[in-house]
Image 1 (cartoon, helix red, strand yellow):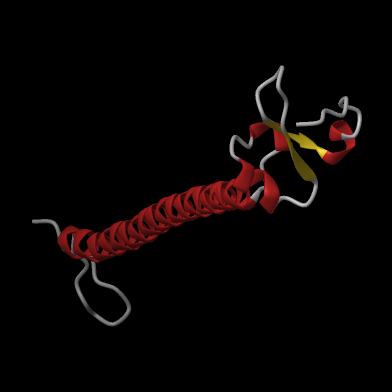
Image 2 (cartoon, one colour):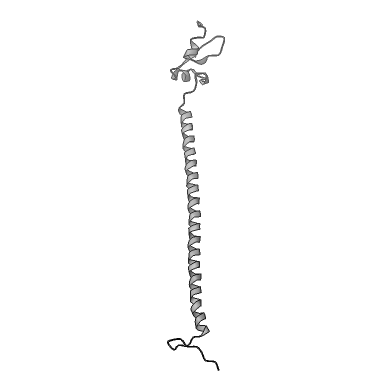
Length: 125
C-alpha cells in the first residue's frame, strides 16, 4: 500500500485539502469581481440619471426663457402706442400728442401724424 506523503510538520497532504484551499481564493475573486461590477453598474446608472436631469433642467430653463420673452413681447404690444393711421376715433387720436384729427368734406375724417397733417390742404368748414 502506498504511503501518504507528509510534510515537515508531520501532517498529511491530501488532494482534497489543496482543492478546498483554492476554492476560497476563487470565490473571493468572484466576489471581488461582482462587487466591482456592481459599483460600475451603479456609477453608470448614476451618470445616466444625472445627464437626464441636466438635459431636462436645460430644456425647462430654455422653455422658461421662451415664456419670459413671449410675455415681454405681449406686454410691449399692449403698451405700444398705435400709429396715427390705426386710430379710428377722434378721442383715440387726441390721446397721442404726435397725432392730429383732420376733418374733410371730400375724404373721411381721419387721424394723421402731425408731420403729415400740415401737408394736407386747409379747408374751411
